[in-house]
Image (cartoon, rainbow, N blue to C red; front, side, top):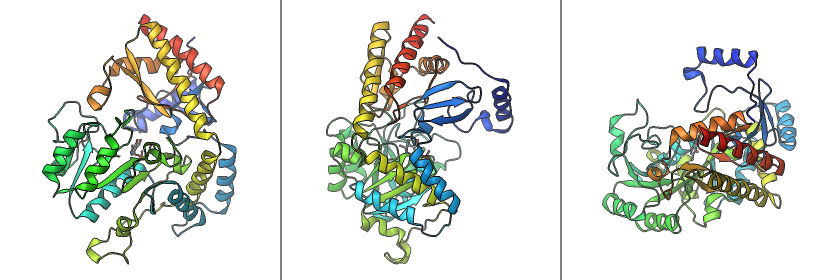
Length: 428
Ligand SMILES: Cc1ncc(COP(=O)(O)O)c(C=O)c1O
């Protein structure tokens, strides 16, 4: 079944990339594939190999690639000019749609990436509470800022709540400003909050941490703890926003934070992200609404970019149509159930972890509740992903993202490829 071919043109591009890009790539996905284009749930590379695409641009392409309606509105805007810095209609209407859809959103501030949104959300909490410390969860991803890159993927375990920086170049002093707790462990969070309540500004959490669903009561518990102790609760909804439900994870789980961050889907495949939250907190972005020393300076050249905003608006309009989420969930469930059956039949010890819009395997057989229990066999994962890629399945190293555009034929193709890859995996 493996049939991936590499053309001379792709080989040349990969060599050039190795010469001019650190590690030969833009980021953290395998660099041997150079994507040439995509439509709906599929992409193809420079050599002409086609893939069912579960990478989805790391999540933004929730309605599929090159959606004709998104293309039409973006092309119309492209001809009218691509960025103005000043307010534009599409950005204003997108903010209004977010306020309508997302429970915590009374005001919206646009930025260009999820990393920025998280960095400002944490700064906003610190400005509002006039305290410096943030509590995050081990393995929680909140972008690439100094605060965000604490105990995202620590290679060694440290004692909670001491964070481990994931990157060189982060000031040592920052380790004193971040507390780390295990995801899904309300007791540990409660004791840290009790001990540090005078210094803590906020708890930031991915409502579904990477793939790990919250235990029943966990998010509710965080809401209660933060409210009772005068802390803010930040939901990082860069991934979950408009993906688990139109109103995001806060609608799906019925827990409303004080602030949330949004990204990926709201830009329709263009660089756009947002901080959204309660009006009294968001007031810190408004010089006229707070004292001089409480004002939070924040500008960005491309913030609210009209091309990104109109692509995002059309994406949301399509997601809002009847049946969209039912379709995404049905596709995801069919894949998850199919994978489980194939793994069981082949006797592979791995769990399918996550929920229909995003999931993956974790090798091993113990329950997955937090970062440490989600650390499966990374080499096995890499090997299986490689076998899948050879069989026409593209995905991130640790996630399948499902789109509205994936068809029954895509699911059938994927399950065949998965069965073949699993057979080869067991044979190796
Ligand atoms: C939960 C979460 N927060 C923040 C980010 C950062 O977003 P961006 O890559 O747009 O900077 C990501 C990116 O994958 C994410 O998954």
